[in-house]
Amino acid sequence: MNKKVILIRINNPEDMKIAPMGLLYIGGALKKAGFDVKINHLNSHTYFSKAKEIAEENPLFIGFSVITGEQVKYAALFSKELKKINPNLKIVWGGVHSSLLPGQCASESYIDYVVIGEGEETIVELAKKLQNSEKIQDIRNLAFKNKDKIVVNPLRPLIENLDKYELDYSLVNIEDYLDSQWDSDRILTFITSRGCIFNCNFCYNQKFNQRRWRPHSEKYVINSINKIKEKYKIDGIRFQDDFLFANPTRAVNIVKSVNLPWRGEMTIRTVMNNPNIYKTLTETRCREAFFGFESGNDRVLKMINKQQTVAEIRKAVEILAKGKGYHIDGSFILGLPGETKQEVYDTIDFALDMLKITPELRYTFGFYLPYPGTVLYDTAVKMGFNPPKKTEDWEIVDRWTNKMKLTWLDWTDSSDFFFRIRQYMNLLPLKDLKIPFIKDIPEKRLRTKDFSHTMELKILTALQRRFANRQSLFRRAVQATLPFIKK
Image (tube, rainbow, N blue to C red; front, top):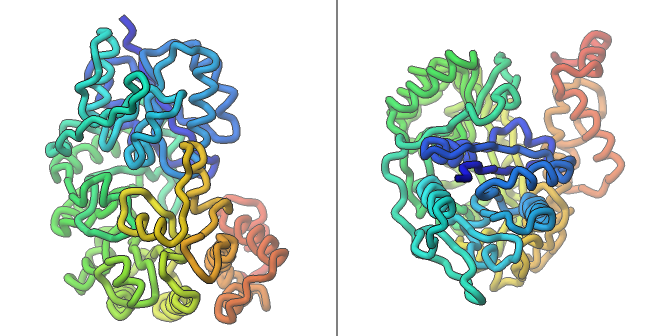
């Protein structure tokens, strides 16, 4: 009786240090149910070389975890290749993209089944029925082909007791996912909850988690992290929750009990409701506090239902700046449907002005992506976005590539405009290099909205990347030979 299940995640090289969290949950559930689980976390530059080896293992099925963007194309091409080598293979897709577009995914010849939403219960039920050659038609959260018809079954209730499932790190080589940053050398990623209570108009959580936040119990989280801490000698932790501080008391108890340097996500509202939170972050050795700032314009913030104002963001940053030992990370989204060019410039100016409050601020800037199932997706379609008709063509909906036409804007459809803004924002830390002229270029370009210097961007980006690597010979040589450079 075939008990072998292979789970696959394909990532770009720069993302290979992030453990495939969804597969650790899914794999753990299958393993607990008695299946022989193997996780293959593959590099997008080399994954095709593994096709023959994986196909010839002839597992019960091969499951892909897929996120909208380039990953879709990797998963599609690899699924096709596996089917070509072994036509009898069963291919299962899950993850955010598959859950948002289950019908389209299930219609593809190279996908046999699509798991919708959280998959622990569905994947175990599917595995048992495939193993016993039973009918799968009644499995909830499943999409599949029935002759010429695509069937998308009803959803099952969201899992209420998350403690039944765990991140099974024994399924991977954990050394591959231990990172070095802050004052730590063995930082691991962990999840304590799922979903978010807010209703931002651009977020996948609206559909995927049905705008609900469900936590593992406080006791479960503390015990689990302490076991990992002891077994793997980790000395730092990144909480990957969409909203770690949905219950502030719970979050604080966890970070205090775990007693490790940490990174987590919270909201501006979290800070406004607790003006002394900076003391807690300092005392518990927070190293990064992440926020979704999203815009520097009140009209845009209201349009996306962010439930915060520019003044509140500024006030929250002023409060957080009182703390020590951590820096603040914030994300911004540009090019939202209906956003004007001036409102984009308002966001740039706002981000630069907040650096005056605390120069340690770090930002991520990305252009809007139309995720199906969200309010803004429908708006983008009405304003000109033409959704891809084939699954693999969703590769264009990727914040890190330059393949997207922003057709929902009436003043530009070029993602390159937003790419350049992001690049200059990423270069702001070059101020730490106290080299005359070079240190001031990024802010000057952003202040004057002059993003036309292609060669300059390439040179400065190469410089920044080399200096950002703490272990690089370049960085050490510069620090040793140029005393005016800030260490």
